[in-house]
Length: 135
Image 1 (cartoon, helix red, strand yellow):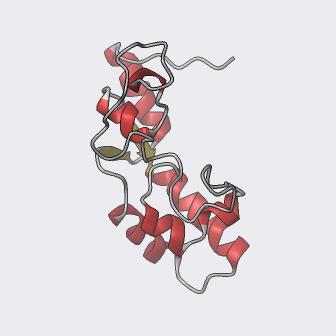
Image 2 (cartoon, helix red, strand yellow):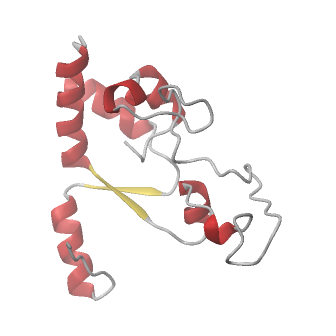
């Protein structure tokens, strides 16, 4: 659910469903709390010191991490499963395909949706650009 915009978080009450609070209000999140940077849309930081809390290097928002080069992948198969769970939990009347289509239309910018994360990881490992280790 990290990969979806505020419209999806609000419409489907993702914060309530997943018990995620907005950091600013301590209330259930109605917007994606992981996306926006504390430095604002312009990403203006008071310090260039990597150790400073006021630098981009200490900003863990998706917006700042993407600015630094992070590439996010989103698994279509997992989305379908999440939507089925959300429909069951919230007793939603829509068909899963309808919600999946809507959510895909509201994926954050620069997020690559892949058919299967398992396959995508295997291809990245073969190409030598990725290593997946569980601890």
